Amino acid sequence: MVNIDKESLEKALNSGKIEEPTTSTPPAPKSNEGVTEGAEPLAKEEETGFHKGSLNTLAAERNELFKMVQNVEAIMQAHIKRLEELGVKIDTQKKEE
Image 1 (cartoon, rainbow, N blue to C red):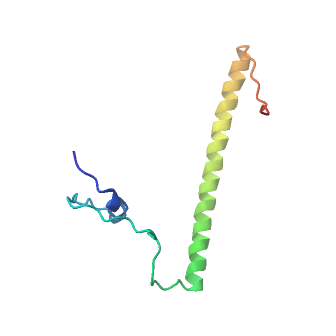
Image 2: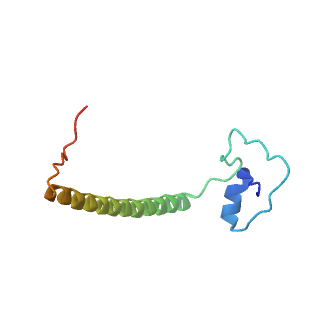
Image 3: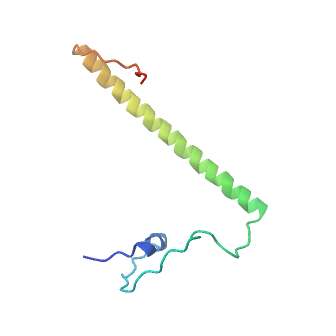
């Protein structure tokens, strides 16, 4: 069985290459991991573009999620309709606790 170095998993996924497992102990995570120190801030136009692109992507994801919910609802309604045809009473109201 191959020993997977979980610390470099993201790096391996982003590079698209398979890394050879290391036998050394992985470094301890830093308390401020993910914070880039000393990096120059993005220009206002670049940051604006980044956020606009993120919002466009998230809006498209939300639309796809809404389509999925609609499909699930349609299938549920078909099952409810068939159960009612079979004489099974279905209470579709939410019960308050």
